[in-house]
Image (cartoon, rainbow over the protein chains, first blue to last red):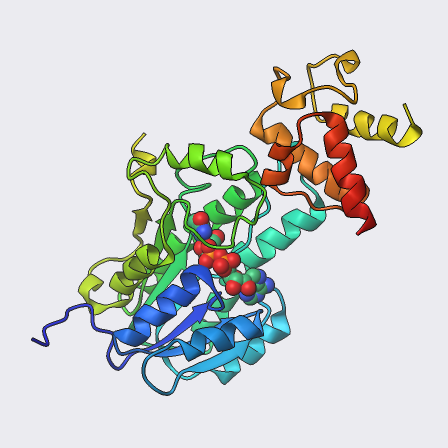
Length: 247
Length: 80
Ligand SMILES: NC(=O)c1ccc[n+]([C@@H]2O[C@H](COP(=O)([O-])OP(=O)(O)OC[C@H]3O[C@@H](n4cnc5c(N)ncnc54)[C@H](O)[C@@H]3O)[C@@H](O)[C@H]2O)c1
């Protein structure tokens, strides 16, 4: 049986933050479904590891720091025409509001918000998208649907990004689509080790599905939004959170 | 009380708004302070990073019982 409305056969897809976590899982699933990947990240070793995990031929790695305008120019100039773009790189630093520093805030905003905006701007300006291309941003439930102690900087960065996604969807239609995935807590290296195992176990209890997400849970939602199965879906924010926002 | 732990306790106490300064002693079991929350734990982790250039994680924070335990941990990690 070959019927598969989620196939990515013949599509070329750029993934940022592809060196680990959700970006790596997304790249693996996209390759399995027939896509050719361009992987980018600041972490070169991680990129090479991801590439080695991909099915199929012709995938590429380009290491780039999303906060550097020159790196963004070089990245965009090196790209083939795209059918998909997964803007996924992101960072956090759990910090109470009164401990926020200029340095930390600027770093988070540069990577989570400005980088994705500048990269999208350049991809559009340089006409890198084929007709019917799909853009998917990894936003979060944090900042958009939930608040949590220590999450102000991250939430502000993701809230701004969510607004950007809706605007790109409007301006891009009808030629290209633009959506977001909004995960709850996922088992990756993102949050670091600021929370103790006890705190995590307690937090997990606040998820109706009683577990944190795995990167693949999010990757498969991204696949849906990249595929032609979602061709009438744009400007949407797809929550993937084990029911967390039901409360 | 030696100078250093006195200074550490001052930085520690600064992360609280309501708790009286007299409650912060080397032997204080800080997890039992009424005002102590995960947000204050985050503040303390960031304070230790800023003041002592030492990174402590959530599990290490949990494993310390008294303020002195935490001070000793920070001192040990600062020497590494
Ligand atoms: N893990 C979660 O709980 C969770 C929840 C909601 C949303 N998200 C979002 O998912 C996305 C992926 O995160 P993840 O959880 O897989 O974490 P991760 O840390 O595994 O992946 C993030 C990637 O971004 C890359 N990166 C960081 N700074 C960069 C820069 N300046 N330039 C280029 N690349 C850079 C990192 O090297 C890393 O590979 C992020 O946008 C994150 O905010 C994660």
